[in-house]
Amino acid sequence: MLHKLPKKDERINREIKFYERFGTWAVIMSVRGEQDAAHLHVSTYNSGGQISYSSGLEMHYASPPSYKTNTPPDHETCPFLHGKCWHDGTSMGADVAQEMVKEGDYIGAMHQLENFFYAHTTVAGAKKIDLTNQSSIL
Image (cartoon, rainbow, N blue to C red):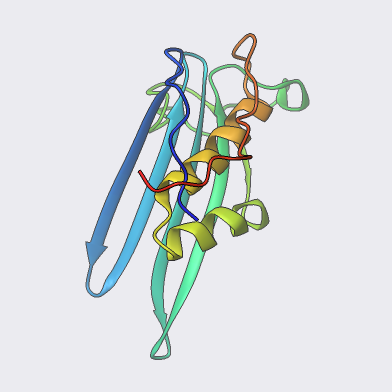
């Protein structure tokens, strides 16, 4: 199922990058606000002649979240926030978005990423995207 993008939220930037190398590929999606960013990566690799998939979903914070206040930053130069960041993520949480990417539904995967971002962001007034009745081709 393909989804329409919701009305643009001026507080965030979206980006999708595609990479292909030696018969494998990767898709990296990101949603960035001023203080936070989320990214999804889905990639393929050759495992004994079989194509396998790897994916992950991560949240990046310019300031440490409450559960990491006494830890050093995970990155000195975050590729998404371009400065120090504390990040946390899940590979299991990326399963739904991974399936969408495998089926070519990049908009649906971006919805999943945005919902993850809005559920974990410090952006004031952020709300989850309503995915009901969003099924239509662009």
